[in-house]
Picture 1 (tube, rainbow, N blue to C red):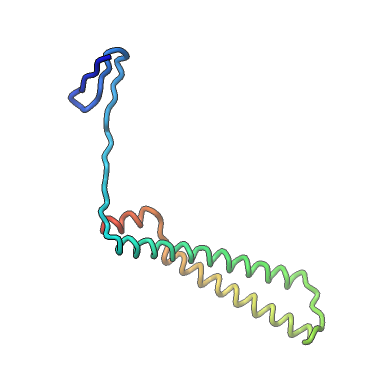
Picture 2 (picture 1 turned 30 degrees about the horizontal axis):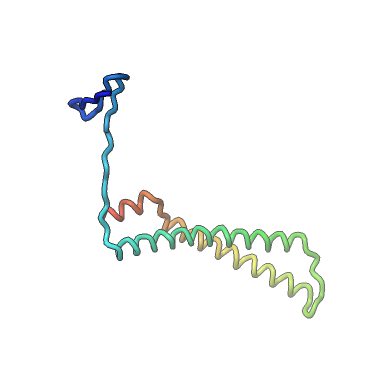
Length: 121
């Protein structure tokens, strides 16, 4: 089997008449180790904010379900005190959810942004 190169960089096989074109462009990123660490730390923080937002939503929903389904009783304190505590926790967890959601959208990063930061853009 003999092979020949075409003028476009392809390879022609004499037996099968297959033409293979090499049309790949490689891009190499040269990044300092410290700079890459900082970029990846920022990316990790952005993902942590997203996880915090979903976690706080889950806590808020579980407190709301507890408020709706529970029959508060007097135990060490009055039932109105326990109900008020759960309402305060619900408001607090909702506010934390809004704050976490804001931070996750403010610092939103995806892989393309990480690559652009590595390129220096």
